[in-house]
Image (cartoon, rainbow, N blue to C red; front, side):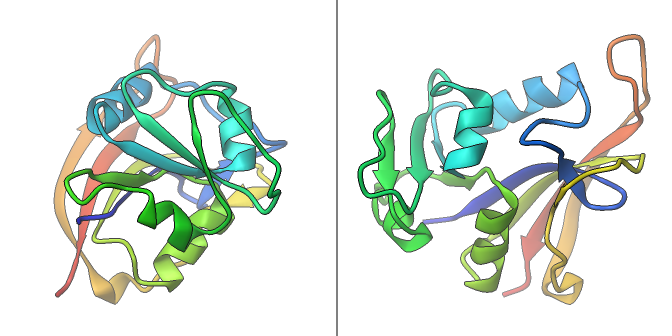
Length: 164
């Protein structure tokens, strides 16, 4: 099973503030949907609650320490390992946040590919994508997008693969 991580982050690694997104990039929403549709999303409870519902066409696994937590249309796990074990062998799981889940996945060396929307701006934030060892990753593709009337910032879709 190939585990992927998907995130949108700013130049200063900012990913959120007050459990909300820092930007509105419709092209990134469409990209996220195209990448994850038909696959499994693994995310922490706060990330899930910021979205507010299971995303259509995707299996959602929520990680929480709360043993009594329930969410209609989702599976619940109490650890990242438990969440990974809920994924069928023929499925592709996407680690979709938040910061502590990203950090755990990278520290546990679970991630084979990172799909990162790199936003060409810095933001004030309280949640950041973790620093990772860049020597373990190679950039395999980059697609640059200029800001426009609907997407306020320049950004790039970048795919990194782990060195084997």
